[in-house]
Each structure stands twice: as C-alpha cells, then as structure tokens.
Length: 475
Image 1 (cartoon, one colour):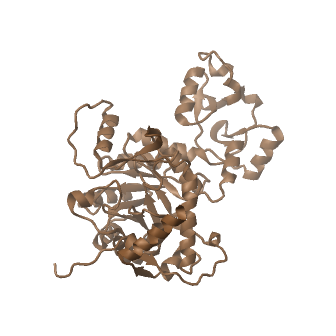
Image 2 (cartoon, rainbow, N blue to C red):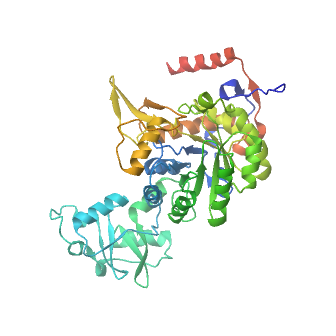
Image 3 (spheres, rainbow, N blue to C red):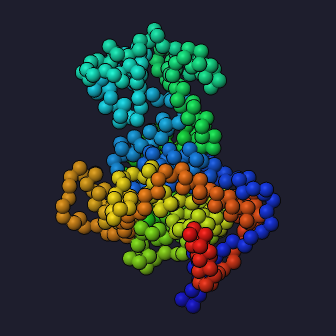
C-alpha cells in the first residue's frame, strides 16, 4: 500500500505537437492489425453489443476499412446467419450461393431470400443447376403458390463459367451478354456465383477490409459457456477472427477455453477484457493472438462502481502494451473514449485498434428502432452486463416473456442516445481526427506515431481550457 500508483485516463493528458513531414493529414496511413494474422485498413472496431453490431454495422465498418464484432447475445444459428450476411454482402465471387429445389413455391422462395438477404436463387435438381430465379422473374407475379420452376430462367438460357474465371473476364462476359449473374460450375455442380452488382460494390469501396477471397472481414464474439460449439460454427461460416469476450478475462476458466479454441480451430482469437501486465503474460502464453483492454471505462459499464475494481484506461493500455509489444501481439483499446482525440491518444499509447460502442450507437446501422421523445430522436444503447440486456437475452434464448424481474448480477446500465444518422459519416469524422493526430505527432503512420508520441500531463484547468475552446468552435 506504500506504493500506490497513479492511473491516468485520456482527459489527463495531451499529445505534444511535433514537426510533421505530411503536406496534408489525408496522407497519414491508418493501416494496422487487430490480431497477429488479421490486418485492417483503419483501427476502428465496433463493439459486440446487442445495440451496436449486427450485420449492417459490420458491413459498414468493413467497407470503410475497419471491422465489426457480431455480438454473442443470440442463438448460435442467428449469429452464424449474421456472419454469412456480411460475407455475402461484398464479394465479386459468392462461394456458397443460396440454392433451392425446383418444387419450392414462390411464397417459400421469397421467405428464404428474405432470411438470407438475397434477391435471387440458383435452382438445382440432384446437385445440378437447372435454372435461376432472378428478381425480374417474380417481381410482378401475384400467384405466390406457383412453383419457381415455372418462373425461373432456364439453364439453357444462362451463361455459366469456370470457377477460375478472372475478374476482368467476368466483367467482359457480363457486358457482352448483357446479364447480371454468372453461375460458376464444376462438372455441372454449382460452386459459386458472380454478380454485376457485387463487382460494382466491391470496386466502390477501395479501402475496405477484405479477406483473401475479396469478402468483407467480420469478427464474432463468444463467451465461456458454449465456447467451442459457437466458435466452430462461426469459423465454418467464414468468420475472420473470434473475440473471446468476458468482463474479467484474466481467469483460469477463460484460459482453459482459449486453449481449447486454439487447439481445435485454425482461427485468430482476440481475448479480453484485461488491464494488467500479468493478465497479458498469462493470456499470451495461453495462445492469444490479440488482447482487448478495458475494465470498466465504458459509459454503460458500472464495474468500477459495483466492484471497486479497474484501472484508468490510458494506464491500462500502456501496461498491457509493455508486455504485448515484446511478443508482437496487437492490443485493442476497448472503451473510455469520449472524443475523437481519445482515439489518437489510445493509439499513441500503443494500442493497434480501438473498440467502441458509444461512437457507433444511435446510427442507422445499429440494431433497434428510432424512438421519439420530447420531439427528439433517440436509439437505445444498452450495456452488455445491464439488467435490460440480461432480461432481453433470456427472453430470446428461452423464447418466453418474463413479466417479473429476473435474478441477475448487474454491472451495466441502459441509455437512450441521440440518433446520429448513417455510421459512415461518423467513421469518416473519427478517421479525420486520427489522421490529424498522426500528423501532430510528426508521424506518417500508426507505427511511427507510437514511436514519436510524447504525452504531457494536464491539470483540470488545462482540460477545461481544451473543452471551452471546443465548445466555442462548435457554437
């Protein structure tokens, strides 16, 4: 007790400005890694919270170069479906296109397409392609009980291709034959699909985070209950990395589950949350490919209030980085960021990525409805350990309504946040701030920023000076 340390958070410090080699902040490079083998074009990660990240958010994050973590507060099947929607959303080759038998009714076919987030189906018989049901084939059809075999475009009228077709050859074929889709066949069996729309979309997002097959990157979270079963299903669905997410990840149980995943599956695992050097050492030794830092810094987390435990976020990042950097393990700073400049501070302190719920909550892409209150628009933002989250999660999993209060331990709160519109504008604004931070530290990229950065501790008056300037500018 004689050696009580001082813990610092983002509002306690500022970055010291230095001479910059950049002509414009737009020149700053934001490429980074979230785990040992997964690279991103920017360090923004949307949190695995039920009111933050499902497939719409994950798609938007990846298109701008970051990544979204699909939350685990649903059935395995539902989470897998969310991952598949991301993987199918932007890739010029769809490796696992949705197929249907020819005796399916249009009504059932439309239900299937809605569930899978597509507007066409490849029709197969005995694993052989016999036609394709496109939007134009059924858009004006009123008889929903009609078999799709009567509506589909027949196989003889389709242009198919070999799975090894190049992007340029595919574009040429689409243009020459004035078609929108090319099934990929191997001995008559469907092994893929190319669509004109997917090619256009993939070329529209040049900085998107993509896997080796050109699909958008997506992460998904697992807890410690059905860990291996859920992780296996997610890996089979094509997830890029698993986030083993527990409020207090420095535990024997988490280490056991981490070792189990790494021994059974070939996938990178980001583990959190932690806040100490010892936790970093133990999880790295257990096989972690990335570490997530943050014990109680979130505005919807009450861990520090309820348990009295935690470390101010800037100090926690530096402590974990001091160990992780020796093993070349990326660090993700999770929570505690209120202003765009806090991202620059987290990165400068050594974090490779930042994970946030509050920055991205309240946007169009965040799950949930817009709520009108006193003439203003809001969306819900619920802490994962809040009572509301636990109650809704139990109702989802048991498919029952609970009118009485359930008995759960609570370390979070539920809030209404202002409706913010499209998340892509939020992302672009945050990245402008980060690029500006890179420039101010005399760096060209994130690695140089971490080498060059120098913090100066500020008094409460110094911080108030910063806030008053920001307020006047916003007015």
